[in-house]
Each structure stands twice: as C-alpha cells, then as structure tokens.
Length: 134
Image (cartoon, rainbow, N blue to C red; front, side):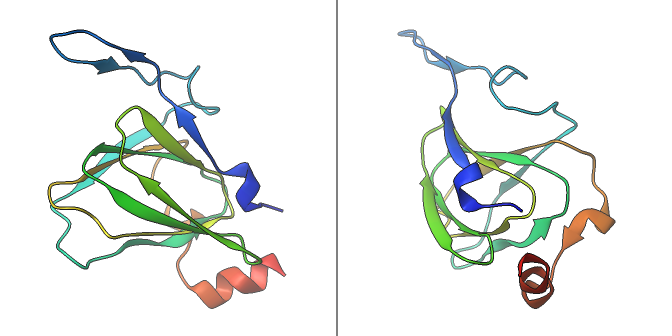
C-alpha cells in the first residue's frame, strides 16, 4: 500500500559559484534508476497537469524555473507541496494520485521517471484509483 509519507522532498546537491550555481541529479540522489526524463513548460495560466497515478513507476519532480503546486493523494489523505527551488525535488512513489497546478509564468517542471512510458502503468480515472486503495 502506498502512502503519502513515502513521498518526500529531496535536496539536490548544489555547487555554488559566483558565475552561477550547478546542481547534479545522479542515481545516488534519487532512490531509483533513471529510465526517462521529460519536462513540462509553457503551461497556460490556470491549466492543470497530472491527474493520474502510476501502478509501478516512481517519479522525481523539480521546478527548474518558476513554481507550481503538487497535490498528492493516497486515497485516504491529501497533501499539497509547492516546488520553487531548482535544488529541491519531490519524490512521488507509485500508487499516489498526483495533480500539478498553479504554474507560475515561465515555469519548467522536470520529471525524472523510473521507467519508460507505458500506458498500462497509468490509472487515469480518480474513481478507479480510489477503488484500488480501499
């Protein structure tokens, strides 16, 4: 059974330099092997992303630029997390419903996933998700 407490923010190592900072995400930072990387950008004002859960896949979200909110739901409780630092990411384990909203202008959401895209891994209907968590 997946619970919200398994989702957590993780600080990404930051190398500070007067010429600009550098952060590195390697397998030692996140607790899964990286199989896919994608990013969301140019999200229109008021638009929401996510709205699904994964049966097996884990994800790590980072606000590379700007900010957005992530709603986490395990079928029993909900939690909202604001991402707005490029050196902090949110680990979302499998079995957690997620919704992304309140994107600031110019925000970029980096997603690092534990697996390649597989439509069969998605639960896209909230009622079906709730049935599986009871």
